[in-house]
Image 1 (cartoon, one colour):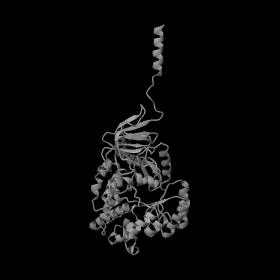
Image 2 (cartoon, helix red, strand yellow):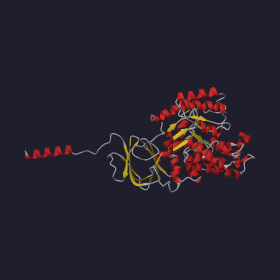
Image 3 (tube, one colour):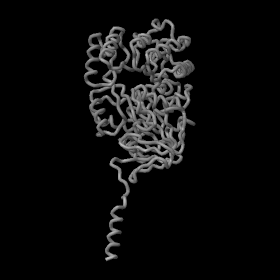
Image 4 (cartoon, one colour):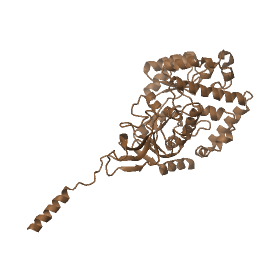
Length: 452
């Protein structure tokens, strides 16, 4: 009898033993990692970061953050955790076939870009955005602009106003403005956009000018379009043809004493800028096109595209107006504008205009970061343009930083980008929401694009 009671006691005790805790939702724990939270310039060393359901659940010193037994543990020793980057002047192919769009998304994501703003809209982009949001397609968070407003698509003020209403009703996030608008058509577009509540972004038409653009309330002015023209006295006499793309040929006549007025206007109207400095440093510079075309990343672009890029560069260098020293001075003027905007507190957003001349999606974001540092920003300030600044611009208080409650859009780096901005290319893994993509997954994504 005693033996029977003993066996029963053992059975009851065994039944009461707790089994390893299983989580209802998947968890990831980045263990012993250095965190760059992007709330201020600092590094939190030896941290554990717990992620679940697309959010950062907790962050604390290594060993002090509890997690479930079935959590995926990611060894972060010697690595750095950064919020996912944003490309705020991206181009997703404006075509009916969704497959080329998915390729571009893969290139961005494999380079740590977890948010993009498409800057040449197409009706299928609305479908693409929905498929990304519901998880049917893997890609960065996608903000859309509608089809272009330009001198060919908008001939009258009435037509411009109606297109604004149509794009607002369709569900686009922004309106994209291109060159060729008149003061009349631009006035109708901007007034109607402000009335219906859809922001407009992009180029500033030559006949509109930077002051009218500022007064109208652009959400962001991209390429610093109109900035150089505003510095040139009597620019109207030079004309759009003499001005050249983004003021490349009128820049020698620029009066830099006019810069504070532009900056004041941008600040007063809370207008952000997307410099796309990579265009100037790569396409417009005196550097031969072969230097860029021979870069390893070009294998992800079609040969036809590369040929077009090379021809565009050759045509620019062959233009009789092209003077290497003056163009170098032009690039330095753009750097000065970027630097002074940063110092004055104008909001700057990361964007490279990819895929555009020599700018391969994703890869060009890292080039742009370097060019911002070359312009005078610190590595931390450059990183802000693609993380916390973007969150502020989008009005999202749970993005662009690493803190409890923020979205788990993250990049694991093998080196410290605050020491050298080029270390943003040292990507070990990317996480977007609930999807963790280690190095081999990222390489696989790139390989598929290269093969196609």
